[in-house]
Length: 242
Image (cartoon, rainbow, N blue to C red; front, side, top):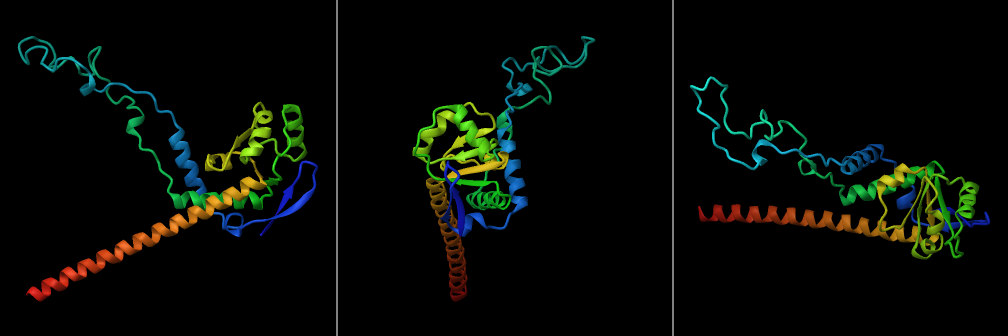
């Protein structure tokens, strides 16, 4: 398919790219699941209190069960005492599992989000930034010109060196490359800005993910068939021995 490529002067050209990323069916359920998993993993959950079994000290009974006139108690580690454990307190981040995104989920999520942005006309592709832009004011005026004041820039190495400095102090703008691309950021920012080289890099990465998922599928299928054959051979040998 052909997408519109812009230059800083406003000139428009067409760029030939694969259909597999930009014209996929938008999977809303998958996008919401990606958001849920990312937000769950970003939560701090640093608070931690010691349980009764984590308190260092003697476990012996503090006094006899009967005859003292006091309530029955075991050790000083009980939550009832000062310096004892905390009952039902926060247990820290180790008590929460990390919600993992599979390769297939990442691949389908990436194509769904980019396809939706493309449908909403929130996808911009620029020619590689060959000219160095150092001034934030100059960069901000360019963002206003292309209505990209709330956007994520996915840049190639050369473009990153030339313009990343001027984008540092602009709010609601993030700079990254294809290797460090987070799906959460694609959803968070209104517009996605690619350069010609970075979109080609993304295309290669997507095709590599596609090949990997296909390879994994065929390996799993082969192993399943081998196990089935193995079980059939065992059954056949048992029947022969009878």
